[in-house]
Image (cartoon, rainbow, N blue to C red; front, top):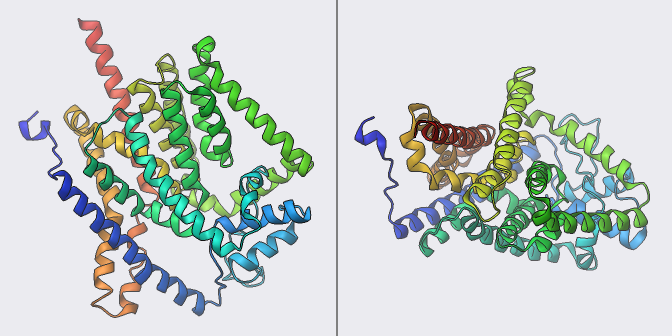
Length: 438
């Protein structure tokens, strides 16, 4: 191994890194307002598509309002049409081929209404503004939380740089613009993991129960925590007891307010899956290759979880497995939703922290690291270039390239998950081989 290949420095000083981060975030948001949104407006006008408030919070808020104030089933077709009237500007019409496929139905567990109850008496415009501020705060706070979980002390300037990059990432920008609950769930998970590491299991269990309003996101994480808990039940059962008790209360209250809600929720999930199936690895790779790929990733993750089940929550390995679990989760859920990429944050932080050992380990590690970093940086580069060109070139010409920043949407979660798995297993096997020879 050459000396140049053995080290891979990041050449930026903290305050220069902060400037670059703010510049990239400004470029992303300028691209949104000067390129992406004008393109969407022009496309909708040309294809007679409706445009409403486009807030992902709205279907949940209106469903909560109708259930709590009027006793109406939020999963019903009637409420779905009212949601569409606000979200899109009118109910969708199946006879119009250009109408959106996403029905924007109430596809959440019904207990989400309890957390939205304080807002149902307010105008939705006010709720939007308040929730936007909450998401900004939660997203920023998740950065120091994950840094603490990964045991990576950095300077204040570097922390602010990371916050700017998260807020100005494609996932962060889309999540904030749409007021996506995923950003709130990401913050709840980060806080729950830190509380577990700080030996606050009861609070961690409650937060994980609240985070289950996005069950597809927390499923793999809960499987990992179940394995970890069973490895030392007497010392670790308290978070599980807290989680199960909180879930029992939420489910019982949901059944009381809307009997037989679970079957309705499951039907809504199946319908949701139908119009998001084109955003999975199955559509991208095709079966059976996608099945083998997903099974391999899940098996590798479970193998790592099993090997590390004895680690303490305060250990570096615990944070590594949590990061790996969330990265694989993003790879398995519909990947076209860029806002889900906020769950890649701990994985990306882990890879940047471990960049030197990854770079030194093997040519394969270096190659995958470079590919992952290119996929990560590309949206900022493309959006900033398009934002700058929007001040120079004709609007139509710039808008014709609107999709450039999202070219890496599907590939990035796969690369992050693959690199973390490769880093973990090569490090594990290297350590095992060294122990055998000593």
